[in-house]
Image: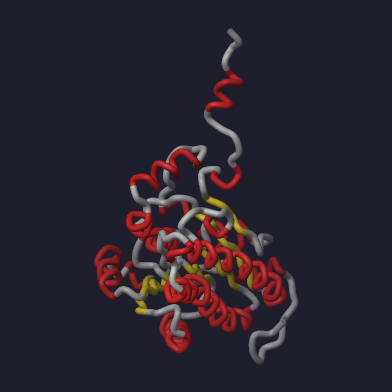
Length: 283
């Protein structure tokens, strides 16, 4: 079970939970400079926790720094390419040295492309897998190597309803996010004895910069029709779920789960006309 030299340590899970949420929480958020990632960073800071904002886009990091300021020393900015193994190893080591032990990680970095399967190249498929799936794996693995020594930590992977459903145009993106869901389960089982919880969030349609590039007017109309709440979600709603899963006090007995924050999309059956007809008096 061990990820390195330290053996699994067993003990009172309540004791480990209390130690994790002792006021010294530090959460690394990849893709943290925009969209869902930025909303999670803001929610983490609102809890009084410290945040490491990791992002590949330097311009986004600069804008994020301007938006958040120094947050009284509770935020650190780190340029990181999650698909580069050596860079991930170096960045996480540097974060712990300069900012203290990581107690939480949110893998929010991701890319996507709306493209039919027959038009998707192998290069595009690999690129999306490298960022969304392999990148989440690398960051989780390196963080867990350090968390295991403290017998505490929570990792949250941002998946997608496209990893659970057969959404058109999402062959590479959906495959990457489906992989994230499966990876989350395996990590949760292997790392539970080490005191590390691993869960995933599968957002439905969310108003983010990525959605703006992927969702045409036709796609937006389709989502509005398919989601029972008939709206897009907000990044803040995903952030609230992430904070819940990060905090052992609220989710200490939850691991290996994928929580859909999707307005009911993944559970929807017949709706609209059928329900309206059933409610109407016979004439």
